[in-house]
Image 1: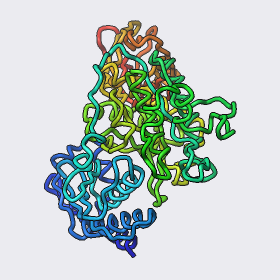
Image 2: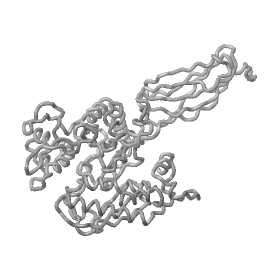
Image 3: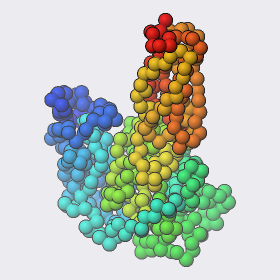
Image 4: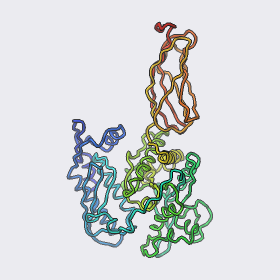
Length: 510
């Protein structure tokens, strides 16, 4: 019933959109056209939003239902009220839990992430372009109850020369108490698990960071097929906690950081903490956590990148990685419209909080969505998505802003027959060289005289130029269409310009 109500609100009464003096009916306002406005460069801050009271009511009921079910699954029978408000200046949902729900500092991270996705999804279905969800507990953030445990550690001095990185591919087998069984941390989804599909993504990212960025890369999991002595499973199946236990047996503060925890999933929580604690131990310059996402609503899909809400300085890295992934994935045939969020999202993930270096969590796609699951198993998608992550990291380190690859306007050119002139093709963006310049004919006044061509440029420090010629005594007009395409398939939109060959002395073309 709640879901039916949500669908009705998404279709009809969620929001009134007012922009530029035009008023659209609520039924016309969907997340799709909100995203199109963002991608078209619309100034969302100048948009006035009206949040419908019925949408708020449904979000509150859904949040209350979910937290009540979560508590019941853990043996606590209680109903928790949740109040919801939406700040459209910041595009953030605020969900405030009433009495009865105060998770521990290392509890409920997965639940809260999934709840945030739910609330954001339903608000976006009503047309509101939400960036993030902020949780409160009787009016106060969780860190106010656990100031020591949830404090963001002092950031290490950022050294531009530190090109090292930790690549953490989630999740792997863990031991579950008290039976001490070994179990995966994520469910089977369309024939694969997040625990086992992310390591090959980590392999691709490691290779790209080493080859393209010159980075020294460390891994949080062991990729060996040798048996892990305690579980007798391949090391490749095991989570980071056990690899780090073997690698650093004396550093129990890294892999056994919650020795007094008695919860059945305590080693799961230690595994989450072990990855950034290991990154701190290494002193790497960047930490990248690779995940796939999951949700009970199978329609939710796409790329998301998270930074910690109390580490806003990490947001530029998250935005750069998201931008790079969106560009590289959509450059591949068949993935031109693959969904990717427009903005990085703030979150409370422990992996990002504990790391003293710039740290981001990449949700590559949703393993719970049928289309995304196909993409996740496609080597083309894997390579493109990790090229995007690498590019985002590299641009962040270089202090550059990720921007679209755009060929700028080319002025029309008129030459006398028998002469030539070299012109430069200016562009914006950060293509991966070599770059190919592709000339095709939009129109030619002398059939056969205008031949398509391709020229490759290997040096990013050398301007992209072309020698325009008017051969012999030929006169006429050519309208050229020009595209620049980098080695990863990222291409500019075509730009046309006119090329005229005239008789000497400036007489018009014959």
